[in-house]
Length: 278
Image (cartoon, rainbow, N blue to C red; front, side, top):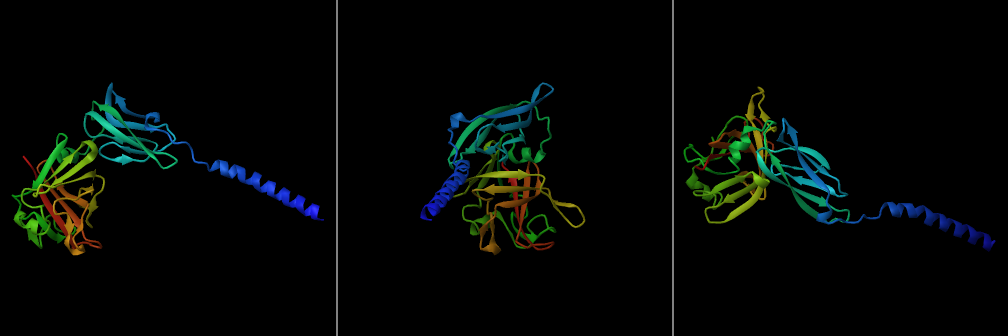
């Protein structure tokens, strides 16, 4: 009887080990690779013999993908991205190994022709590659609040440039913002000599439409790592504002807005008015 129980126990134990072995094998962490082992490509689509501004990126390595092509990012293994200027571009790839380590590699691609349409606002914002914006001293006011979806500039409580430092120290007279295409870099130069660095993204497909179907905001700008000059929401404890609707943008002037949470038609929105630095 004892021998019979022992045999059953041993058999069950062996079945347990056999059953677990494939599960453990399937869950072993793969080997990490180094950056020099990455097999990635970035190739411009060629049309009429010229390299265009649509680029196919492809990751052939066993790592997760993050492609930073300067004006945006994608986490797809393979994707087609749009570049907005001609010339040589650097695309930064960051891979995530199975063990959690990160590796990076830069690939270069040349664009000869803007065959695919690029929103004009990219050129307005960054110029030939980098552009500086300052408070619009020709406007009746440069910052303040007004009616969300109703107004298109500060309309209720309005401030002049000389009053900005009282709201955001260092962001008033003499302060500026710089947008650079390569790497989508954003820098805020405060009038006390300090510099805040971040990145930006421009989305001209994100519109705000009024009830009558007219366009109130034509696009959207997001900032990471910083904010616009006087980029605060006073009624929210002065929290940093990093998301802005584009009310107006051409090569000389920019007006952006931010709605307070829950703001509907006529609710409180904040407005910023800038001009390009000559």
